[in-house]
Amino acid sequence: MPSPRSSTLRRWIYAAVFAAAAAVLVGNRGFRAAVKNFLQLRSVGAQIAALDKEEKTLKERIKTLASDDAALEHAARKELGMRKAGEIEYRFPPPGPDDE
Image (cartoon, rainbow, N blue to C red; front, side):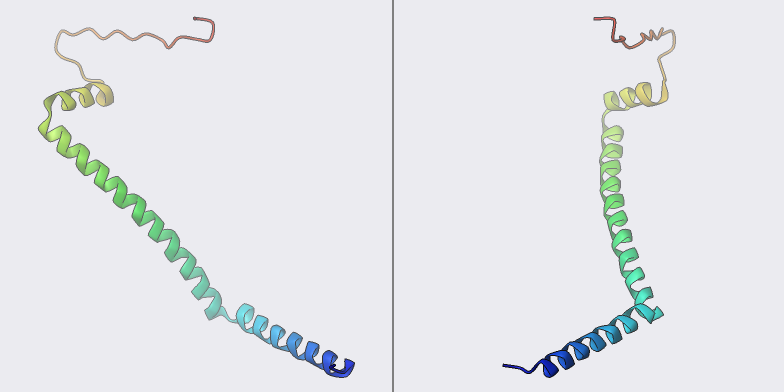
């Protein structure tokens, strides 16, 4: 059975090692910068993945619009508000909660 004195000494040694490690990690600007850069790298990696996915979707849409005249006409009408010459556009307000 360890003596109370050796147990107390062991606690002081653990506390000193922990304090030294904390001082090195917290007080070291290089370590903090490395952690900050690592977190920023993860964030940028996620943004790149999202942009790659968006790029793929947009390339597919370009391919569809270039090859399908009906899809191109639908996009022009829906997104740009275009209409054919002489065509009349009717707009109806969406039904309200009382209009059932």
